Structure formats: C-alpha cells, structure tokens
Length: 169
Image (cartoon, rainbow, N blue to C red):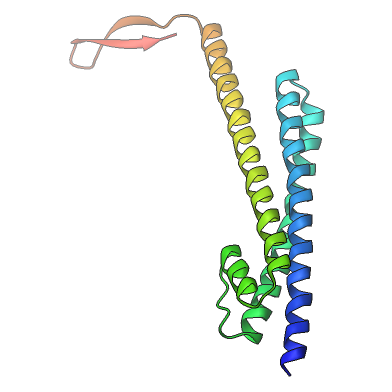
C-alpha cells in the first residue's frame, strides 16, 4: 500500500511541477502582451490594443484553468495524505521534502521563484500602463475644458431681488 502511495505522490508532484512550468510559460506570454499593450498605448493604435486586450483575456482564462488543475491535484494529495495539510506552494514543498522527494521539491521551488519574478514584472508593467492611461485621461480632460473657454461669472437677481453670482460658460 505504501509503495502505491509513494508512486501516486511522485506522479502528482511531477504533474504539479509540470503545471508550474506551464504557468511560468503562460505568465511570460502575459508579460509580453502587457509590454505590447504599453507600446500600443504610446502609439495610440487602438485596433492593436483591442487585440492585445482580447489575447490577454484568453491567456488569463488558460492560466485560471491551470490553477484549477493545480488546486485539484493538491486537494487529491491532501485527501490521500491527511498529514499533508497543503494550502500554499511552500506547504507542498515542505511536504515533498518530508517524503524525501528533494528533486521534485527543488524543481517546484525554483519554478515558483521564477513565477513570482514574472508576476512581479507583470504587476510593474501594469502599473506603468495605468499611469500612462491616467496621464492621458488628465490631458484629454484638460483639452476638453480648453475648448469650453474660460468660465465667466454673471450677476443675476433672485426672486427676492438680491444679486447672486452665477457661473456660466
């Protein structure tokens, strides 16, 4: 019985490592698309920008599917190994090390570090994109207001005959 559990654990840990490698590849593609998004923002190329956004949505869908698979594999590990209590990748790594599966644990740990680095780069690029968009929106607002001309103040009279200030364009 224990031999079959060890084999099952080996297959699941390898499957998780493969999923994590695929996560890294998909997140790398997502980073590239996020950089492309910035280029199209700068160029005001709306057609290409729309395509990149659609590509990003599709890619995020694939990433979410991989995450669902990973969660299922971890849940199966927890069910088959009650002492595992795996909630995060660090818990999985510790569990694998406790089962003398150093090679798989190290592979997953390294892939996780790569993934965290890629995610950090994506977040930074997204912030850069958002900053550019915010600046563009402020510029558009200022341009729109400049077409309205300066606001003039008029004195009008209320129903009681007293003067009141009125702002009009």
